[in-house]
Length: 488
Image (cartoon, rainbow, N blue to C red; front, side):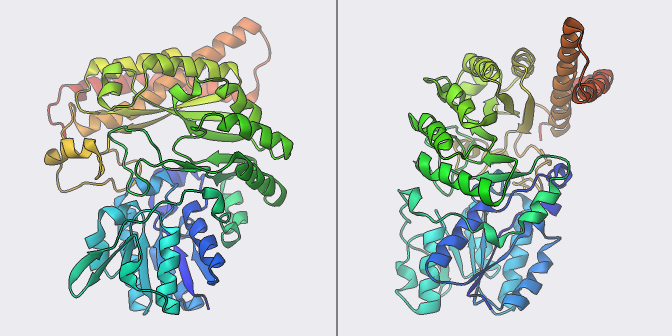
């Protein structure tokens, strides 16, 4: 029997694109909640939705553990959870109803629940946690299980009382992240995660910060807002040392919105990693303007960084300015050049369809990709979420469907310059052009050096050849779609 059964709403099987990729990560935010609850003296069980077949499997876990409380505590560090996908919301609501039928007290936390409090309460949730989740959930358990305090005095809660919705005072964010115990990774089946990575290296997720102080007007921040707090470099290096000793992951994915924002943090982290013999190759996300400060890129490489993803978004300065991104196309190019010079691979997040974007702006983005030659790209279309200035700008244009069903939906939620199929085709075209350009570079390098090509290079060359041959078909389809005027 457990005091509380924790779960989350992201099911890998409900997201076809991610299921094909098969690179799952444990629900880090949920595991942090588990470790805080344990520190308060509660017994915790976990139903890991990431690896489950469907929401119905929760019933068996409730029967097994007989919890007093079921908490659907989403992973705030999983960008897929922050996308508020329709299939995951349906799964979450199903689990709320299932837990209520089993006689459990039901608590929900996450970006989607924060945006749709009434929906979750009406489906049977007793409380929705607003803001940072761990301390609020622990206080709520103290009230429900031990009779300590009053529910109305717990900050960061929404609940229904006498037919009316009550919202308590705002929860103050935790300032010293080093005070948190490390996530309870023993609750997940690490061996299953390892095997699911198949032929790829096995990667685990770690987080060093919470929040983002920048003001990109399409970025939703329902949990942390504009606040930015960071763990100490030493605490992060010590976690890596423990993971290297106990779990032996091949890679680490630092899932921060921005890695190493604080001045001097990366430099100190690199030193701590080396002092503790804690180096594990890692990838992270960073801003191009911050990467260009001091010796950040060299120190990233020194600490073990092998891959950096940057929010390039667009090759049009007009669009970057409209997004209030705070970066320039020139900074994107220079950061890419320096990262490659340091032996670090580069990934670009690209976003098409932002209001005001023209075909000329799209072409500028393709030129940026061609000239910068990133190692990989992630392509999306502008996706309005509540709480953003972008959402307020386009909400009058939005129809009944206001969330993607899964991560490859790519539906335009507002009236774009081109029809939805244009942007889906643009997604395919961006990937084909990049692979074709990369194959051309591989072939040129082979003929220049005259050395034997490794098998990986042969595979990339053959794949690039395929993309080169099929490019004209996709380009013709894009031209045909460009003439259509229905923008949603």
